[in-house]
Image 1 (cartoon, rainbow, N blue to C red):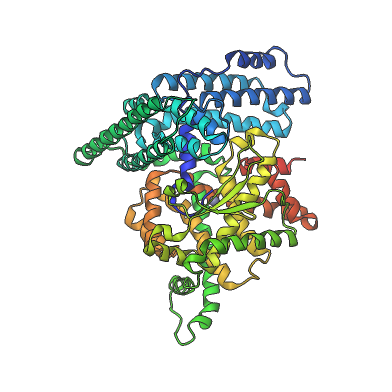
Image 2: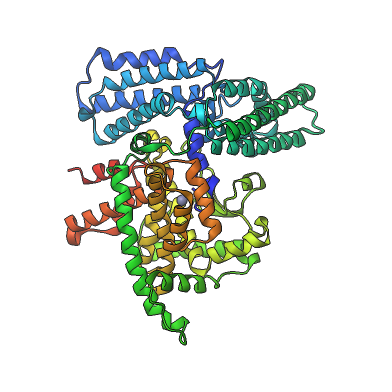
Amino acid sequence: MTIRVPFALWAPFVLALAACQPASEGEVPDADRAEVVAEEPGEAAPTNETTAAAEFDALAEALIEEMLALNPEWAIRQGRYENAGVMTVPDAAYRQRMLEFIDSALARLERFDPESLPSAQRTDHALLHNRLESMRWYQEAFRNWQWMPSTYNVAGILSVLLNTEFAPLEERLQLILSRLEHVPAYYEAARANIESPTLEHTELAIDQNRGALGVLDDIADELAGKDSAAFDPEVFEDRLEAARDAVSEWIGWLEDLQEELATDGGARPFRIGGELYERKFELDIQSDFSADELYRRALAEKERLHTEMDEMAAELWPDYFPDEPMPEDGLERIARLIDHLSDRHVALDDFVDEIRRQIPELEAFVREHDLLDQDPDKPLVVRETPEYMRGTGAIASVSAPGPFNPGAETFYNVTPLDYFGPELAASYLREYNHWILQILNIHEAIPGHYTQLLHANRSPSLVKSLFGNGAMIEGWAVYAERMMLEEGWGDFERELWLMHGKWLLRVVFNTILDYAVHVKGMEREEAIGLMREEAFQEESEATQKWRRITLSQVQLTSYFAGYAEIYDLRERLKREQGDDFDLKTFHNEFLSYGSAPVRVIAELMTEE
Ligand code: ZN
């Protein structure tokens, strides 16, 4: 949910995909139960829509339970801890078990004719089908488990168990102890899997696994001096030691590999090319656009924004530079003004307080302008990002309870900027200036991610809550920014609109560059030049973005894909409904289906 810096932003997606693959040694899905469910729909064809719906819901629930059991890491991230002590060892036997599950699950799904199901179940059917196809494609065609060493890291989940207070610390330490036993086997399987990786993901894996050693140290600190009846601290120490050795060996092995690839060649190029890109786009984004169509749409949006921003810049110029003639070049005018306006920002020490101050204002604006339903019983808690989460480099993020834990608090994590050191902090303050900070809060909090997730958790569909569509989630937050400005947040101030233009250009360029680099082979220099000159980005921002493009694929397009589809849907309904169109009704209904793909929601909303 993070908006700013690389990892927190997309790491969850990477992890979610990795999580589709591993499962646990020693943990067998509840086969008996699966069989019972499997037989029902096959034996007697459902007699009517209601029966079919109930039977489909039972199958969906059974499939989800099997997935949770097959994949304890994914379960933990969703807030289910029954198998949290079981660590998935990502070996060939595991992949085989996963494929068998996929085949069986698809066969069971195919016993239902989606057309005969009510719309809610029909869309759940489509989502489950897509998820299963996607799991198979990642395993058999994309094969990132082979060339992406950064897929392998035990620390993320250990850190969740150590820091999330779902149970007393002693119980969580027991789960950690039980997982630690399998760390050596885990990295042994990882080594066996790797085959001509990319240099970029090899370097990332080295970096991130160094971080894993830090998490093991944190566990050791937590354990120090504990005299537990629940476990033997000596066994714990031994397992921690073995885990440290396994992580260090993995790092050493990767360093040798990195050197070999750098000198002798043989590394896989990070660009995935057109064919894999289109299919990945189809499976991950689930959009009505193809990747190529979205790319062209983004190019057109860039032109529109440049024209709009240039008009604003021309109007603003005399206010800020009364004695200076306006530059001939439109892009230069915009760049000069953005640079000038960026000096207006909060003091370093006020950053977190200012965010905290704005949240009730946003809440009141949404209420007074009747934009959508909010839930006063579930306030958003603004807090400084906990230490263990800061390593991601994110400035702001939202930690929301999953569907299994709807009563838990939602946190808006903000990292105090001095954490980044004086130089970076100064540049972040300019970037998150007076205007952009408001847009950030709209995006992350109200009515962006926080509000959307509150609605999603009320959605009765577990399928839609669990297989949340990233493009819908990010698209909603980006849509919310523009919608708030359109409804008068900031009182139509031109400076705010100009800054919003810059902010939206970033999203537009995420799409343009991800496609241009991976599919059309654009080089680093050209990409960075475009970000600097046409999207008005700082050097550091552009180089960070380049790195992210080399490490992820398609995910960067999700923001613009979702935004464009939501905006199109709203405009279409406005045209069709004329005077009957009501913005609040549109928002509430749109959000009521959970985090489903926009095209699925559009289908549900426009159905007779
Ligand atoms: Zn976001």
